[in-house]
Image (cartoon, rainbow, N blue to C red; front, side, top):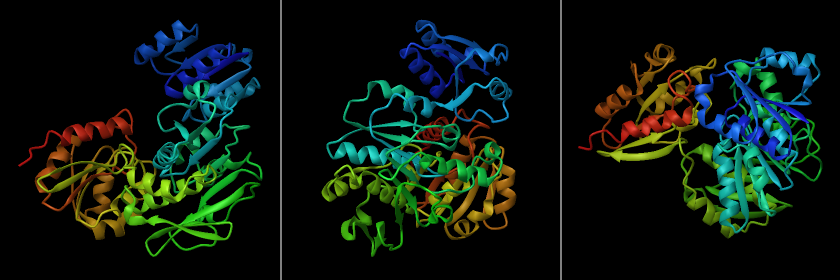
Length: 444
């Protein structure tokens, strides 16, 4: 079989390597220059993988039996149009890797909470004596792990809308949609398309498979036609599923209520992490996890890097890295996670951001806003009539300014509400730089 892989970054490289392991004839095409992929080029050469960098050659596309498109490649990309014309099937990397996976899969998607829920599912399972591996959009490609999975391992798979866009037979045993709010609209074009793409996670599920939905989300409360066994989670009492009552997590399955634990004992802050915890409990229940193990796992899990991550305390001021907040809705949850006054650092590249969704939270919790990146002026213009705002050319300038104006008992929160690509390689890079700057601040 001749396979074309479009994109040489993490998922593309991993898909190419997996295809070679399966003795397929592989060619990788990448738009960016070769100089950006020195280590990858060495791996391709060592594994007899042909490649091109610096653009896509559209000649000869008819020769391929299959094309694997890396996440985020625009639907309007010329190479995709040519492949369609030549009747070459195009799939995503998770669809490709799925063909070689015999293990149970818990797949997690949603606008926010994917990474934390994926990590929490893995933590609960491993903490309870099971074997689980995290993969997908969380940082390690599905193709990279699928060949070496232990026979009894459970895959906890974070899946983005980009990856779901080109699935065919992908069918997780358990699927979670954490929530749906506007995001990636430049790629999807409309909110309707974005929502429908998220729902693809259950499109191949059958009656014995489990679909877990957020009952408090307007896009998920009324489930679309699905053959799956559906369970809900909510912060309010409901019949069946997992919910909160009087500050306690309640699990109601098969008409039997069980108290899991007080929410005060959960190791990670914020209302959004209550949702993540409820979803993770439902997802792992069918793998025979005891209530005692849930209590131990949820209290010992301290969160995910770059997601409301506590960095340090300086002069009584706590610094939090929430670089993973790449959209307005994610920042809403962050702003509502603290009771102390917040000095908020925000900005980056916008994606049709509607900052009015944050007005109430800003009035209630925010002392001042320090604006950076391409959206700095938009954020300033929107909020300057509500709260003190200033703009800065660099993240470092904003962090030092936050240090100067914050007082003991306050919070410095870096929650951009924007993409990172105007100033940084990705949100991980952005978060690392933030933490490095914080650690340079004077501690007196």
